[in-house]
Length: 336
Image (tube, rainbow, N blue to C red; front, top):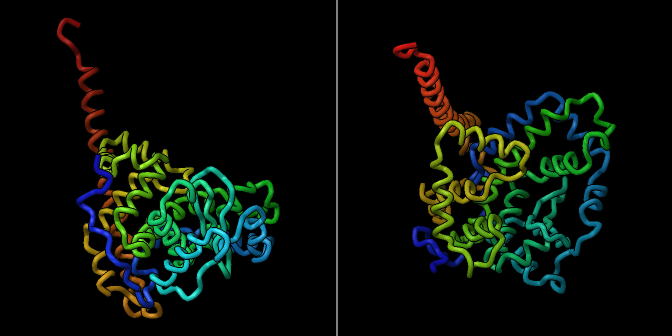
């Protein structure tokens, strides 16, 4: 049984991506969702109140209380991977890394001024060294993109609940929560690209999705079969399928793993991954000159327009079929 997809580029020695800007990997849907989030009335006020209530130190203590800080003598492999990842993405500050005891396979980047990364022990046990490099690179991507603040706000809202945040009285939190979840899911697509660039190992990146989805040993799973499954999921085009896809993700913090695999594979196939490895990327500090704001909105609009057009077409076709079936069902039959 094959465990590596021959259609993926082979792993190569990692290249240092000097001064790479997060805009090099940020997904247009991520940027569009963040713009929409920031435009919600009361959003800025809610963020300021939540951060003000807990403070930088309070937020760190909330997440550090039951975790082990990674260092040269504690989880030394993870310490080395974090150092390597920061070097590959040329990020000057290696974020603090913590391991927390929980079987749930997950990780996160949280904090305000100095974000840090938390890995669940379930993820550390499940993933091999190459896959952990992808995961740490993914979380560093969140840090570099400035995602940690908003992710922290969402986690606090989800964990503590509206009733335990009385200082937010008068602010309509439900629209903020739903918009945060929508952006959170889209931000994962950006960070998946960062994880790939940090590891420069496409097969390992895809195995992460496979293990997150199935949680099993690679001796029992086939990466090629999983990638075919991802393609099949995307190809499901009926109107009802589309509705189910939307409803299934409304309360979720992460996109489906098959969708993430297909999305990252598409980015690779489009050539953008290889282009970045060869030095074709925007450097930090040059974003304003290289990517005007208008270009950001055009790219995001094109992405959403394509998705909307596909969905509307499916629903319209279903509606036509339903109307035809309804009409035929009530046609006067001979002899009636």
